[in-house]
Amino acid sequence: MNKPVIAYIGLGSNLSHPLTQLKLALKALAELPNSQLLKTSAIYQTPAIGGLIQPDYLNAAVKLQTTLSAVALLRQLQLIEQQQGRIRGEKWGPRTLDLDLLLYGEQSIFTQELMVPHPGIMTRNFVIFPLVDLEPGLTLPSGESLLALKAQCSSLSIKTIA
Ligand code: ADP
Ligand code: MG
Image (tube, rainbow, N blue to C red; front, side):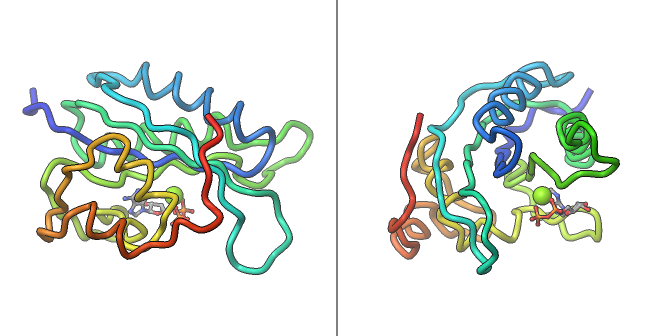
């Protein structure tokens, strides 16, 4: 049995009733094998980036303790994405749920399949704000503090909805 590790998972959705998607994903995360859901952030709403007209995103994050390896955890997250990722009636509809492994203990992982800390952590307010809810005193493996990152990122156009 592996040693328990604290991991942080980011959740995002902008399709097919995003709030329902996040709630379903939270339930699935609470039922992950060999893992215990410790804390859930607030839910945040941000406009989609990239210029395409599409619905706002909802984002959240969770803190969990797990004895799954990082790769095993990633595979579990991908299973949950797949379970929620298909729109009825379409063969391979757009993804309705994105689950990212943001942090896995103190580890830095750089493989083709898995990059931890997730590269988006540094700049995305919709990742940093939920993480601050979970653990404001968090330090990344690089030694950077989460609060320092938060001070650099925009709080414009991000709001909590729940
Ligand atoms: P996004 O970067 O917007 O989350 P995707 O969810 O489509 O994009 O990316 C999925 C791919 O990212 C998967 O093939 C997965 O192997 C890879 N990946 C690399 N690092 C991570 C991570 N930390 N968490 C989740 N997926 C990751
Ligand atoms: Mg992803």
